[in-house]
Length: 150
Image 1 (spheres, rainbow, N blue to C red):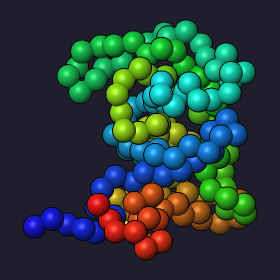
Image 2 (cartoon, one colour):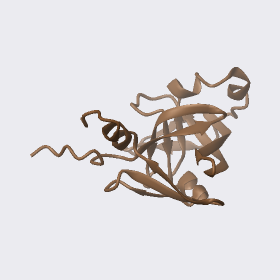
Image 3 (tube, helix red, strand yellow):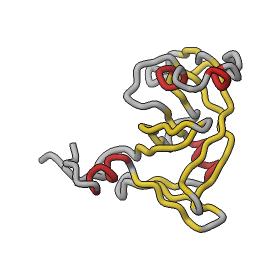
């Protein structure tokens, strides 16, 4: 039977990266790197793009064949909204590949923020100086706003 539970699926959030609001950010506790896909990277301001460094490490994909990133870039990431927000500098590997997501927040970023994700609840929690922040998955927010879950 098809499950129409709005939290049935990955935790996909919206965040502020380099002072730009970016949606469709997949949180992946299994990913060893923080990834920004090239289709997202090219929409960042030019002065931000120019800070990208040359690639220095190969990536292993699901097929275990190594590939190279386009480079790496250190960007300010803001999760949450005042008074429950956290800011950290996260190094993203820019990858030229097809993906329905803009960014993958992997273990490194999640540990930096002290974040815990729950696919069962469709949310992420992380500590802030003002208390515990909760970000709901885009799918849960759409359903709560009255849309029908896919």
